[in-house]
Image 1 (cartoon, rainbow, N blue to C red):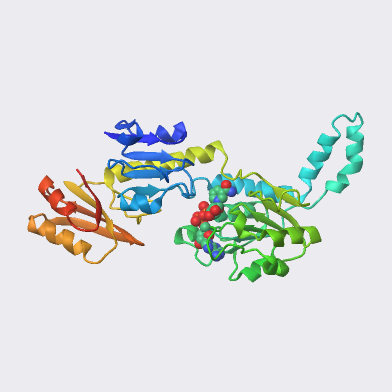
Image 2: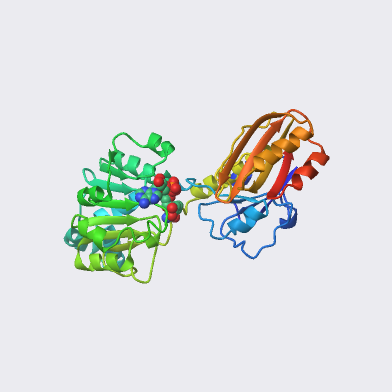
Length: 386
Ligand SMILES: NC(=O)c1ccc[n+]([C@@H]2O[C@H](COP(=O)([O-])OP(=O)(O)OC[C@H]3O[C@@H](n4cnc5c(N)ncnc54)[C@H](O)[C@@H]3O)[C@@H](O)[C@H]2O)c1
């Protein structure tokens, strides 16, 4: 039996995916924790805790290194909310194409006016705009969200350019062949009427869209930012909106600088705020935890390497979380050989300062062997799965 604890409300649709042998418990008794935004930085971890799954992508609320040192694997759920974000990006493009927000506001301001129908017919030209069909869209970052946005935009009749020098094989497979491959950012800036960013915020990408990038873009370009506020330099975008160089800036990240600026459409971080996104994140978190607890497999960890040996069919599977230092595997294999244990299959992966080894053997692993393995320096946790 495995015990889990939810630090925040987690979608029931996800929790229902737990098999019968999983039961809710108090935090000190939990083998696994599910969390959304609760801060875990000041928490004491019980030695029983083996895994934490963040239902969502960001993991700022979790002390990753402290967890890794304690042999606790931290998972997140990348891509589980991608469709929710994609739909809001499409909505953002449509909101930018005509002054829909201005039009709705005008109607609300005239709600008392008995002549509203007539007045609207006169006023409507002020809110008119363009259609997005036939326009060029540049997508910067072709990961889980970027691919969905790019593919959806082709179905709306847009000509789509994609830029991602680090694109994964998986994303490349999912990308429609109608997307044009932009080799440089300049190509996107020069060609596109709409530009949307879907890259993580890193030292490389912070301020990606600044005054220089904007100067290379078409006049009247629409910029969409549903990734992170820091990707766009606030001063540069405000100047470009005020001068009319950029037609509209649609962002999911309110800031003091941008709120209230004409032609900025500012949304209060609603990208992943859908019931479906929350369900998908919870389902993914539960399946990651179950595969780890039952088979030792790691998928989408942020502090240990991904590692998969499939369903455990061996007599015993030994999983070892350890530091990424020389001769760890040599010590494990020598120790098992001394005890006359034959290794059937083995895999070892590393990520930064930490590593993970899974060993399948066709005989039982005695407590004596576990005790000996425990004494190996730089091992952080051993589990034997039978
Ligand atoms: N608005 C929201 O509520 C919301 C929700 C989820 C995610 N996000 C944001 O969206 C971002 C993208 O999410 P995702 O799930 O698609 O992530 P992802 O990791 O699947 O994709 C990111 C892509 O960016 C690419 N990339 C990295 N650096 C790049 C660079 N310098 N130039 C071009 N491409 C680069 C990577 O190769 C990858 O393909 C996240 O980092 C997150 O900040 C926002």
